[in-house]
Image (cartoon, rainbow, N blue to C red):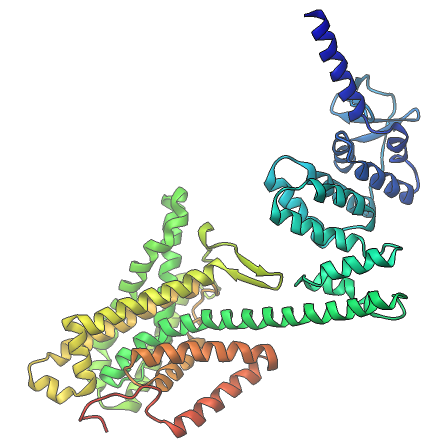
Length: 525
């Protein structure tokens, strides 16, 4: 037993001896010259000594002191020898080791590199991501060692990129060539910037490395261009989803009653403020459930906007059927009333509607292509609403009546369809769908009294291009206009893109005034 305990004690002593950092390197951390400090930090980090993290973290935290030619880690009333980690007495008049911005950056890199050897995968993954954007040439040996022992494929690929970046300034052309070939598979703008100097004759003497760097830069530029294009398409789909939710209700009301409702954008605003109100109630009375305010806000916004729509139809619009100009002016006046009411109730400034945690973040497909969860959810929500509207319009008695009134109002009235009641229900349905669009819009845009003004014209363009009263046309027109607008914005800017879209719509209407999908029926002219 005594012999076994002796062996264990000897083994522990050996481990302690191995864990101690080289005292000479530790003393250099307290040097006056920043360059010498940087060199010491790099040497300690590259050694990957088990105790290196302790020393460098103490320096980064401002706990490294020097007294009597020795370096200590002082934490409160306790002092430790920086090299060995053993506890010692508090030294007299210790001086703190100065850490400037340059040293702080070197310490951050060194600590990130040392975390590559952590047993926790999440820690190693975070460290590898951090080093991808900021790696020093001196870290190449340490990265090679970490890459050799890494078993996780994702982390190993990141380490290979980081090691290649660190090897770009190697004196050996063969090493630089191998690094360029590795980085040629990247899609990062930062990597492209690193490779640009190697593509210049003034910076790279070796012809093979230079030519490989030129080819690598072109390959990365192609991937970045694809990423930008895909990002524009996805942003267009997101915009198209909002336009679809706004235009669905407008397609129903305009198709059934022929009413040009200039207050339709304010129904979006009603839905957005409904989401804000539900969020405020959750924060006040159920803060633990705040992440679930959006599902509650959806029906609240629908019925709030539908109620506003019913009041509008019953009090004003009903008396103006067949009088297009008067209806347009009256609904424009209603929009001003709703805007002022929102200012009185909620203030003139925008209000905050925060994303729940399950809608925060996104999916990173490429370094320049991030798909935010809130936009993904909005696209899915728009498709779900579209599915429900399709079922309502094609599989229910109300939908059959709405389609009948849209195609031939006098004949529908002759066969007993209550056209007046259908008008009210259709207007309530269209207003409610606009309210749902407001909930979706609140997750990606500011919520304010004037928020609906920017969508009313686009919504009418969707209805006209798609075909009056046609859901399929509204879908194709909304998504098409959204994608077309965003792709053009990336090439020509927002103003020129808007002009091009309007010109394209005017040309389209001239060639096909009935829209993508025309109404069918013997009564349709």
